[in-house]
Length: 241
Image (tube, rainbow, N blue to C red; front, top):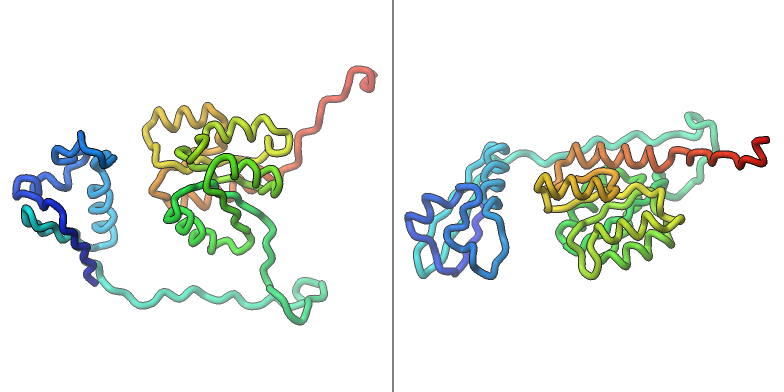
């Protein structure tokens, strides 16, 4: 299968094409208005190669470029359908109609990027026991966290209004939300960013692009912590006597 992406931009010279997949090389565009670090194509190339594919580009100065990837085709993936659980197996009566799976957990994802929201929604399809709540900015996320009290919060760092770090601070100061594990999920992936986030009080600090196993394992651990009983308060001195 071949996928091509065409543009009508400035195009690339042969010298620029030779440097295109070098990490942190933005081909002289560092002073432009488009933000970036110069690792997107490097990551894309590595991902395509890990899937046994190829990536390449054709370009003409003044006309534009064509980026392409080629991947081996495969048959449609079909997941096994679990057998229904009978009332005899559970020892309880079951309704004649209605959904088999009921949400027992809730997760709030605070993120302003629709693509990231859609990706997490698809990942959580693997956990039908989790109900996803979303907020597009930090203030709205705090509001939903206070009202819905989800078991876990997934928090971006760069948000409209207040940052994820500020939202975390306000959640930690509120008795209603202080015990909710908050997982950072951010493109700020430098070691100093991760260290700053952990010092701020995030339960875990995950970086984008999402690594599936790490994401699911962290989510499972956070749910365990969320459902753990609250630590018992120390008795007052007078009562202890």
